[in-house]
Image (cartoon, rainbow, N blue to C red; front, side, top):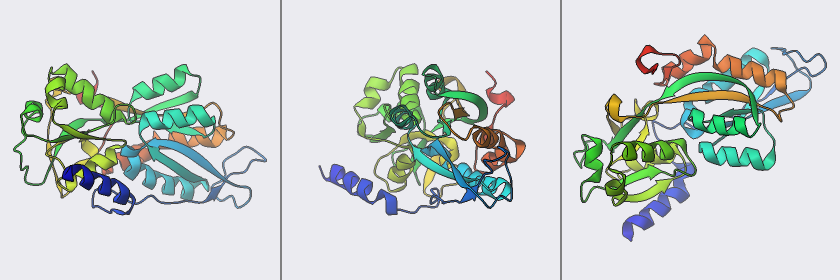
Length: 279
């Protein structure tokens, strides 16, 4: 009970917590010339902005890309960061927005089947790893250790976040889901929350995207062997109900450009394509 109360407090305070491995969202302002339909880097009239539904795990590189895009094209980028499936539900409900960037191609495939997307690019790989608090107090060295009696585990919510769905599949693939499920004390709606929980020693381990914790001083990484893992690709694409098609396509292509991918690499991602993960 005490541990559950602590988790509730953490959730309530989540928006005010600042960690070295999680950055604050940055707001941006810019414009586009709707008269000609052309993108104007120095445009000063007809203020516009792009609305991007983006998986929370890509926040660091996408915040930086948004600022650079605004400087280059004069178009602001407003992000809605949340779990990939949560964003998909929001898009379906509102039928508004310009761009969708989930944490795995599965969600983009669903969006495409619903007729929500058109122009698409592949950006980087999402590589799951086991994250543990600094010092690894439970001595976690493998996936099997997550199933040991007494070990506490926090995973993503499979109904909200891509990392939750993938985490479940990895455990199922290795035949340990039922045993690990007995040790799960909480599920989180976003990958960012998993980083907070483990950083604050609220559990012994979690499954997270490698790029989110590669430079985090409060977390250690336990690699998952390639044959036991499930590697995902991060897509991005324009939405069919966008009223700013040219600007949205330009942004998608900018994220997929060498400049955009260099920013992803800076933040610990392996960009697409890569021979290591080509299969």
